[in-house]
Image 1 (cartoon, rainbow, N blue to C red):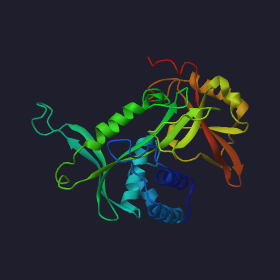
Image 2: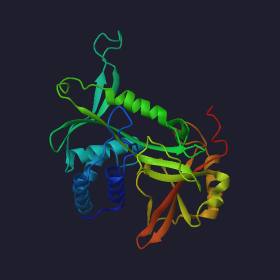
Image 3: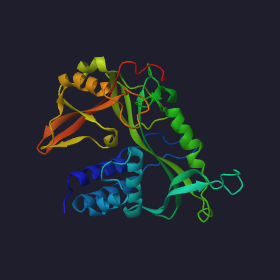
Image 4: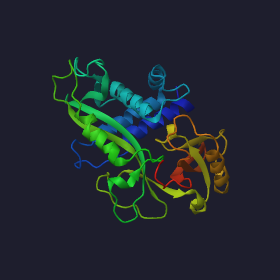
Length: 316
């Protein structure tokens, strides 16, 4: 059995989640930043090759989790399900429990005892049996720094509703400090931040240095919509949020991507339409992937966020 379009997309996201570099730099925070070593990466690569030949276990798991049939899960939940599949079936680690809810102790909050106060993403063991606690964060931020260096405050989300400092505080200040409840409270679970994602820097400028980020983190560009003619000539596809992880790909029978000169009208029409469900700000930045043809269709060669007029203004 070979992977069809749905399986191919899920496998691409899974491979990206496992083999792309960490977003954050290890040693800069109160807990380690997770990274697979060379032996683990080799074992994962071999395992992924097997899934490409026989993807049924992945598809069965995602269908059971409601992560394949439309509407597709939000990006973060989709990533959680993929990482859970790896921990259940992959070659290097063993899942103990996923999405463990944390509840207030009886009497701690009179009238609303046992209300959920959070959850632990994953408790697991590595090949040596060491107990680990992973919190997953898949993030995409635009860097607004003007100089040669950047601070955490310079990184904002595409809709400017999220910032890197806010995510760091949540991840290291709260999530990785959670203590597992009974019966998992008897082991010394070692916390680690499982961080993946992309950082996007101003188009045609050298990316500023930020010591909080992994030196190998994935990089894209961003520019204002009036600057679309500064993008490289070629064909582009707007990438929906649910597809932001792995490189964009179109099959030969898919509609052809847009030439660069058609992007302005396409984006203006999109931003003039009503906001999509759940949008926290509208209009907001849109991700474009530059595509080049190959024998099977089109593949991504670069990605940029395009921000609408007024994007840099403070959110209302």
